[in-house]
Image (tube, rainbow over all chains, first blue to last red):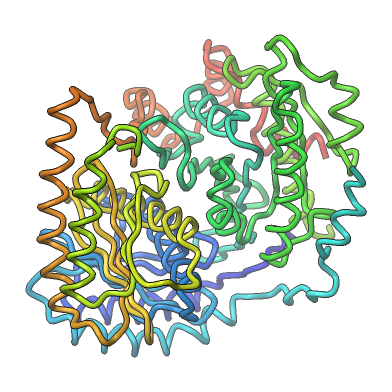
Length: 156
Length: 195
Length: 194
């Protein structure tokens, strides 16, 4: 058997897809992605469209990571709203707990309040599913090398 | 973070090329991208400044075919090497399954390798990963340049775990493929469970 | 654009940034180049780590630009990140620079947005002036470079082969091609190694 740190079962994917497509319908958004915290695409509404969902997932995860880091740098634990205003399209990103990101790309005529509300609801439903995918226990902080350990390790 | 996707029958792993600025991390990925056949590779992203320095990361997804009924996919990333991007490096390491440390062999750059290696240990720990155990391959790059440190010294000082190491000239592709192959093997061994 | 290229014009820029802070009550504004290197900053004393903020903002902008490219948009002109007390707004000035506004809830979002657009226009004029006056060529930042598959033809033929389940003979033919021998990475072979 192969082993992974995260396991995605078909029934979980089915549940996530239902939530995702439901949200797409409710919000009339263009594209929705669910990306894990390391940048891997879990699922998207983009099957074989011209937009490459893997690249989009990587870029949105990188963007979200940078944003969270920015938040930390100005003393915020996290940004509750990430909004990128384009000419035709807007992007709304939401953390799914600490497990992933929900990305909603929507047009200029969609009311942002609605997008936010429905996305929030979707995240609540997605969080337990993503949490359930984790199979590896968190490493004990004490087991990781401290800066002192690193000094000893390299011994320069 | 290896993801085992039973729905799509995929295994996805993340490999990060780490090392000091200008050591040749992006060059490794570009060579692979240029030389790999289309069926094994996806599209590559390079997020770089106007002087072609990596400012966030490079990304190249590769697909190595079937194993035990799963398709085995690796996502290759590089980090930006310049000191100012330390937070970005930390971000990119998140969930990595294996590391290639690309060291610059030039005498004038030698100390930067040490700093980068230590920075890597620290950043990995911040992501809950351990430099002492994570699958790791060392690459001694730029062996074609004059004024380089001997391989013996590189081994002695930098290869603290005595892992596999490869002499390389990434610009011409020497050692690039061998390095990738080894890290793929190590990561694969890690995810291969008990028979 | 680099600080060395800006020269004395930095005074004009600083004045514009100062005006912006006065008009919006924002806490800080940082101007950096496309790579996240700080050009100048204005605002009240704060404990914030500006170099790191600038470097992350550059990454944030670059990935946003990449997303825009993928979606076929020219760019996302405004990035707005809302926290609980502090907010951040990031904007580019063409390919010259990026500015980052840090503001708390005592500033009015609408005003910050409006004034940031005005500021963008002003800075653009200044940068264009510098470029014109000094004959500097500002290289377009390679923010997003999606390497196109050069071998689309090959890809198509490979797809066909996959569809018809490639026979051993075909695999051998592939191996014989002058391409880099990546087949040795195939898992069947890897399994043999193990």
